[in-house]
Image (tube, rainbow, N blue to C red; front, side, top):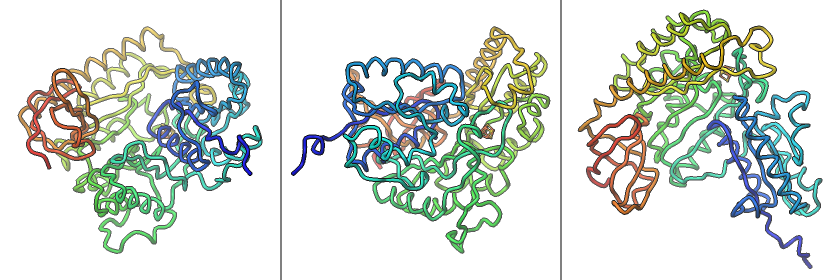
Length: 454
Ligand code: SF4
């Protein structure tokens, strides 16, 4: 005989903040919930469990978690059975539980790597969940719940050993752990079998991947030194996978083999390569382990081998002690590297980092904002100029979305250079790769015409 409690299907609601790594972690968490027989709730008000996957990279991101937690504490007054959890980078770096204590109404506050214990904790907290499966296994071995069948993130590594002085990641996610090669390849094969055509490999220093089980590399693999280049080659051989990209590499591990692997047929024609600053003094204080000359030379070698490659970067303005001259060095580096896109951040102190202990956050907010705008304007001018080469050109597009409007049925996708493009077409093309002729290349959106259905 079953009771009402046993018959109920519990529901969850996941809210994700931050980077693609966090999005992939949320997919893993959804796999745990699905393994427990739970289903996504229609809205947060109807959920039995709400999970916030937090980001700690900026102060503003943490402030949003406090805001959400406050709202959920109100929701709990109406629904005392509601369980609220916070995971992600915030608990990971909150060693003394200083922030955790301020999150009223939150039942579980745990670092990402501990998500495997969630079923047990839920059962311990509330007997309503007691019949659920015990899914405790290796965090990296958990298969994410794929949101779109044709695109997937594949985490190949977590944590980081580099301790850039401004960064919370080594504290929040721990030291670098590389995932088994066998497991990564099995996941990619299984994704391809289920219709996935595009994979994005994720790691904090993704190009520092070292296979714990290198015996699974094929004997015909042409690369000999870099496990990451070898991995890219292996995934290139998987039938069905048509596009591969990765984030985020570190400049010092862009070796000749990794640069060469950018030309593998399935690799997108885009690279996101964080530089953070163009000033030698700032790079040293940030503990980036290379100087500006190294980065500029690296970018030139990448462009030589891959003409037409689109380049993205991350930059921090107003880091401790950054003078006007140092900022101008960043502007100059930007011009030399001709980035297509920059994710520019105004420096904010993150407690526990080396920068907070060693340096003074002495650039005013107004000056940080001004520098941000200088780079923003430069980025817009640069990308507009670079995009001109696409006018009238035929591009290969991964079709992602369909929108019905009064002016027609629009498809939106990404070119191999990760430029957003929109064109008229029918919904059946979502999830396929199509050739499109660009009729207009704006700053952040291209417009085009479908060449022929492929
Ligand atoms: S390389 Fe530096 S910035 Fe990137 S995750 Fe590691 S410590 Fe953070």
